[in-house]
Length: 267
Image (cartoon, rainbow, N blue to C red):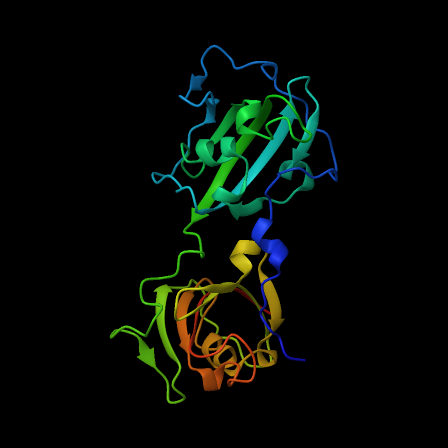
């Protein structure tokens, strides 16, 4: 069966509301859930926050970056309405696809930091839906990366430093791996990836979905089958895949395709 690497439309609006009813346990509200504590800092927009644990990173995410976080949210009466901590799995999503208080607030953070936010209704759901009123979130910023909606600068053609195989596949290692074993065509691999056409249009991304993809390496386009075998776990590589190693002009996306691939695991 051919693995098609397609991006569902629903993925574009993922995590837009940050509310899910299904949680496994309730996390008690902090004692200052009803109002910002006296030592909370406040921005011009009315967003209040207090650092609970300093981070170990130095960079701050940008407004359109992909962030990976653990968080819990309460209403001011102490009722928990959402928590990645309770679900036991961090959440990953574009920072510009969530409520304004998150977009503004998380940009103040560095990786490793945990911060409490008091988000006024004007920066949350604006009274249009539940949960209403001011919302309180404890957020741990685990990591962030540039949004794949912004194409890499060399998307139009392989740069001079890119290597090329006999088949015409071009590639450049963006981040060396920590592994030593290369996958075979018959292996299953788990990857994070984003794909663009040469005009810079993102057509597929596991990063945007916040969920790595796992598939048999011999069940995808030929450029992937060849290219990922060059990688080791932990490596991130950019591939320029000619049409003859992609969809052969038989289906969209057409032409040369560009993928950033991070190899997470080999089975």
